[in-house]
Amino acid sequence: MSVAAPISLPDEHSHEPANESRQAGRFRPVRNTALVGLQCLRCQHVYPLSLANDPCEACKADGVHVGLAASYGAGLPGDAIGPSHFPYAKFFTLGEGNTPLLASAELAGWAGVGRLNIKDESRNPTGSHKDRMSALGVTQALDFCAHTIVLASSGNAAVSAAHYAQAAGLACEVATYDAMPAAYAVKLTASGAKRHSFADNAGRWNFVRERACTPGFFALTNYHLPALGSSPLAIEGYKRIAQECHAQGVLPEHIFIPTARGDLAWGIYAGFRDMLQAGLIQKLPKLWIVEPFARLTHVLGGAPLHGSYAGHTDQFSTAGATVTYLQWQATTATGGGAVVVTDSVAREARRQMSRADISAELCAAAGLAAVRQLRDSGTLSSSASVLLILTASAADDPTWPDLV
Ligand SMILES: [Zn+2]
Image 1 (cartoon, helix red, strand yellow):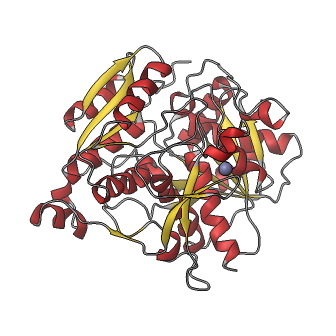
Image 2: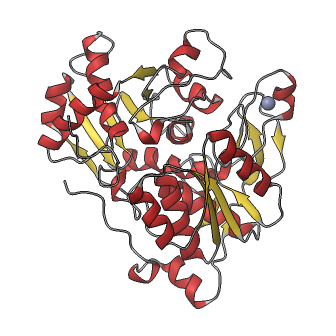
């Protein structure tokens, strides 16, 4: 496998929506008429659709900070993978999704399981799974007549959102760390985004929150503490990963997902949940949150959901000290759990992937190590069928190549 596909500019693509945006001004999304509001993940209370990404007020009064998700009215029976469970019938796209699903007998053997597949999200237009979220985020911004996308990220999400915003004719402001890796910073500058640099997470989120309160700005990522997750409509884009697995004929028993705040894990869970409710699958795969140090692991062991679980890691894309209701729900609803993979163990797994000609950012390689750890502990059987989500290649990872 090669490294991530190069970034494609809109006019290098033949996809209709991007061309449309050039020909007739900004792209005009078509909202799914079944989309009726935003629904609390915990108490099911439904709120009006909006650009804001705020917690459920009812649950907040109970001391639980819970985000909202897209809420759909009664769709057509059996239509779970159709437009009735996706926010937009027509959305801005640069061709993200439909990524390859690769089987690796070599890595299955190394990890000790029966079957191992890899969903290669590095093949998305800007090289990561974040493009699925950016496509819907840009669409929502256009739908609500926002002029600027704002987010906190120092990596893949920043590059992706900036690229999609530029292609859609929107401005983009990104709150980054001072120490943003050079590869991402260069791409951010090239896409015309405005970069605001901060020393810590609180500074980044305060900036995004201030912008989110200003008319015309749309905050794509979380800006609350306790953390919620990214924009509810945007993370619906990750549902397509589950739908694609189904279409590609792979229904694993276990899925391993590198996770910081749980957007990706929840989207994959929601996609399989929709298919289960529609009778398209018989049971949910177990979702395993792969984290560089114990966060959700602590929470599943009884620690508070809203605690701060700081740690240091080279797994750049999954760093952070927070746990969200999103990731808690994705694991507990599926019977999965959390797996801590240290940097040194992730590096060992990445060397193994390199030998199999697979390029992975360090946190994605941690997914392979997590499989082996659960096999060693007896949680997985030798015949287990597993899926890894390869969130991005090693191409821009500041820890690549390994020097130790
Ligand atoms: Zn609630």
